[in-house]
Length: 300
Image (cartoon, rainbow, N blue to C red; front, side, top):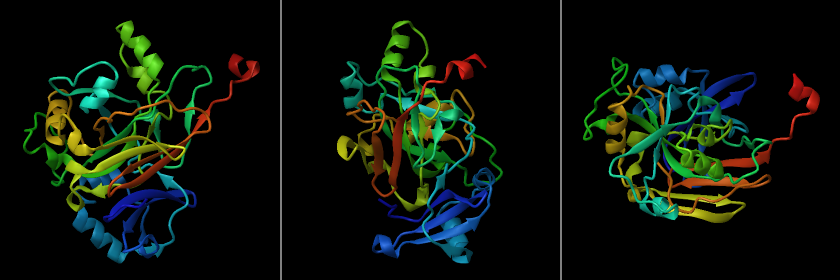
C-alpha cells in the first residue's frame, strides 16, 4: 500500500543514496516518483524544509523516475530513538498491567534501525520469544531554521516539533524483556538488538495528513495480528513530546515511536511482517534467524 498524500523517502541510486518524492494518483499506476537528489535529510529538517509546500516545490523541479527497488532509512542515524511504552490501554492489559498515569518512554540504539525490505535478524543465541510491535512514528523537524533544539515545551504547542509521520516496528525480545524486568534490569537489550527497529519507507509531512486518528495494523504472513486506531492512544503527541522534553532536548531528525496496540505476537525465521498505517503506506520486513558463527570465527 502506498501513501495517500505526498511523501518523501530515501532510496539507493547507484553507489549513493538520494532523497525521493512521491505524489499519489487516483490509482497506484498513476502515482509519480521523483528523484530530488543526493540531499542531506538532517540539514533539510534543520532548515525547516520537507514540509508540504517545500516538498511539492522540490518535486515540480525534479526528475521523474520509476518506483525504486531498494529503499533506505528515511532518516539515517537519528540523534535519538525514543519510544513510548503502554500507550494503548488494551496492550497494557494484555500483559497484566494498566496504562500509566504519565508517559513512560525508553530508548532504542541506532543499530536497531532497518529500512523497508531489510531483514530483521534474530541472534543465533536467542531461542526465546521475539514479538512484532506496529507503531506510528514521528520524525522531528522544526519549522523555524533558527531552532536548534527544544526543551521544556508546552503540551499545546509540542506538535509543532513534528515534521512528518512514518511507520515503526518496535521489535522486542519479549521473554528477555520479562526476565530483565524480574531482575529489575532496564529494557535496553530486549529492545535494542541489532535490526530490531524497522522504519519507513515513507515520511508524510505533518501538514499533509491528520495523524490523530489513523488505522494501524500488522500482518504476519498475511494474517492480521494487530488492528487499532491512533485515536486510541492514552497519551497524544503533545503530551508525550512535552514529557520527553522535560528530560532531554528534542532535536531535528529525532525519531519517536508512539506505542503499540494490542495483539503483539511472536515472529520466527521465515516470517514476513507488514505494518500498514492509513495514509502512510506499508512497511514490510522479513524475519531471519542468524546462523551460529563457526568456532574459528567465534575465537577471533
